[in-house]
Length: 341
Image (tube, rainbow, N blue to C red; front, side, top):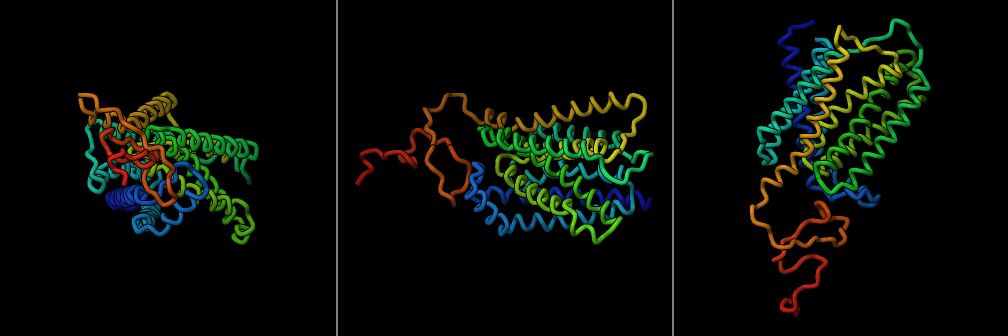
């Protein structure tokens, strides 16, 4: 192992740059046409606008820098040291959100953010995996097929449930879970591709795993942007950060014959950390509703109408916005007689 302080600096630097990437992408998602209905035409417009948006491109640039720092840190240090440090990016994201999105971080949000980071880091430290003593030349096909089917079903269910949700926090959290599932699948495909490359580099071009990895990677980027557009980053990012490593460990154990190394009482500790992680993620997903209740006045507002007019393909923002009752003209409403002519 290299200098411990250098490994820590590189890992924290990568975490900060990844957090900057998430922040830029989240801000970018609010400046492109809405695609939450998932209609093909709107999704196509959303993709084209995202690919040319300077903030999203800046986020991709940050991903490249962060990945380079992570690779150097992993080269100098151990996986069990670097990966838990990268999770600190969740806290960096909360801080950057306040700086660049004007969102005030409450003590409750920060506390639950710390809880997610600590629980996830502790779980990864306890659940460090290693190869089974028995060497397998290929993956276990039946568990791999089952994992693929379950992953596709879970992703589709989360996308559909997220699309139907009215609360932004819940919608973003469900889409964040879908992103985590896709990221775990892409990580499994990347591992398969690297295993093929070791045996025969030329065989990579003809392997279906390479193209599955490309498709899953593109799907993950798209779903991540949709999750960022669906609601606050405190709802989507913790869900993704929690689901991705948890499912990756499950795939590693069931498909690649890895085993979880844990000492006495380790199983109970892992279960407790998973439960704590789930509670913390749910609390962060509910923070937008609590914030909305705090902002609501003590006296009831006049009856509010809902703008249910059709959205134009280039229109931005979420559908169904609430409009104050004293607003003289609402899109889709008939204007008062005094305003005609």
